[in-house]
Length: 151
Ligand code: SF4
Image 1 (cartoon, rainbow, N blue to C red):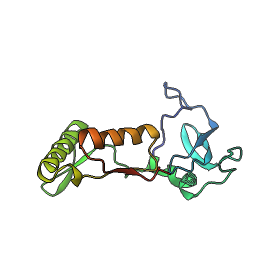
Image 2 (cartoon, rainbow, N blue to C red; image 1 turned 30 degrees about the vertical axis):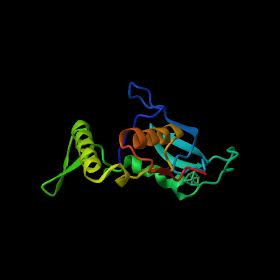
Image 3 (cartoon, protein in one colour; image 1 turned 135 degrees about the vertical axis):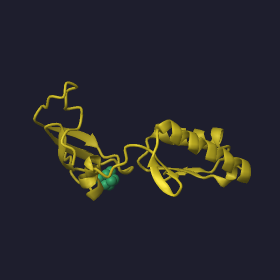
Image 4 (tube, helix red, strand yellow; image 1 turned 45 degrees about the horizontal axis):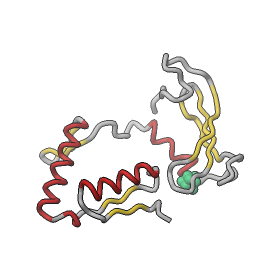
């Protein structure tokens, strides 16, 4: 577990502020439950339902209450991985994006644009969903785009 994470509660000079609570909205799904996050010495220590949130009135499922722990996992990927000779190796973002772009172009040329389907996550914002739609239609030339965010 990391011991220091820069948060809104941690000044940029790295000094820690002690304990505080921040109300926010869970981003794990589209329900939008209110959460209260406890931050101690710049590190999240607890998340609970926000009783003042009209949408959830203090309730939160396991994802909202415990899902934050991945932030401090030492297994979290921090760099792209590219498979080379059967092995996943660390790569730069530029190299990874170039590879994705060239493979998408190859697939589009070989199999046509409707061989693609673009699905955005329920955790995506409206803006990200819009970009996913634009990417599908303008770059991949397909209308095969969907999201579980739609009503
Ligand atoms: S707490 Fe659970 S139900 Fe509420 S927004 Fe988060 S993931 Fe969705």
